[in-house]
Amino acid sequence: MTENISILGSTGSIGTQALEVCRALGIRVSALTANSSVDILEKQIREFKPEIAVLTEESAANELKGRISDLGTKVLCGMEGLCEAAAAKQADTVLTSVVGMVGLTPTLEAINAGKNIALANKETLVTGGSLVMKRAKEKNVKIYPVDSEHSAVFQCLQGCPDKKMLNRLILTASGGPFYGYSSEQLKSVTVEQALNHPNWSMGNKITIDSATMMNKGLEIIEAKWLFDMPIEKIDVVIHRESVVHSMIEYTDNSVIAQMGVPDMKIPIQYALTYPQRMSCPVEKLDLTKVGTLSFMKPDYDTFKCLNACKRSMKLGGTAPVLANGANEAAVKLFLDRKISFTDIGDIVWGAITDLPIEDIFDVDSIIKADKAAREYAVSYSR
Image (tube, rainbow, N blue to C red):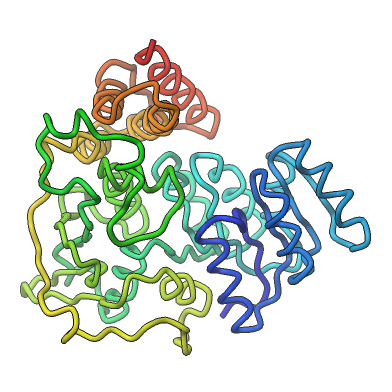
């Protein structure tokens, strides 16, 4: 069980809920990081008193430094600060809940420092899965999934004594706010509509990813690395109720599912307390109130991002990096109202089709491909 933690991305949805878990369980906090939320981070620092606090933006870090000059917390900024927080001496676990590929380098830094990882940043494995898993094995570091779907698979696998018994992983997807829409209907989707998720409360980027189903595509790639499963053995089903969080199928065709109310504190807490289970302040699941559980096939043709992610894994090399980078840039363009909702899928598909795919040797090769994908997205919008 985690005794001391560094939280990368402490002011976001996952980070704030993780601090609720830390408060309830008495977990010590060594480091907190955020992008630019000075007010929220200051409140967190005053309560949890970490040794290190980091803000990505230098001006925000300077403001924070003045505000907490009465405390002993060291204030840093930028990627250098993130990496120092990730390797904080007292921490035994690092929760990576930053958004985007920015999570890759500090996660590798944490692994190098021998910290276990509670992973809530999909892009780390999507872009650098081969590097991250190899390094974790070398350092004997455990990676515990925080995403509800991967946590569900991880929990189901506790009853699997031999991987040879495993037939496939089945990830569930809510389908987002536009389940059942045609390609034509998606063309007129607004930013406000895309940000209105039916079941989960998340940050803007992840909410848009859910609406395009890019989120589920990234989860397929992440599951491949986390559970060492070929992409052909990872399936997706639409499950609107968000009660079954994912399933595994054994070779005898029996299926084990993990269920619960849609509350992220459950997978966050399990990642921090594994292998123990402890009381968690969430609503109990009452299946009589749920009534019906439905399962449908996803529409791969209409939701191009989902299809593009699967194809990127088959292409290999930097293809997933291209898909991810193009998507991150496209989502920003959509939120800035510079492209349409359906342009996001076209940009992601175009990036893995039009740009060269290289082998991944190191972080530099990942950064190079990511840069090319972002430039592709921006040029598309002009």
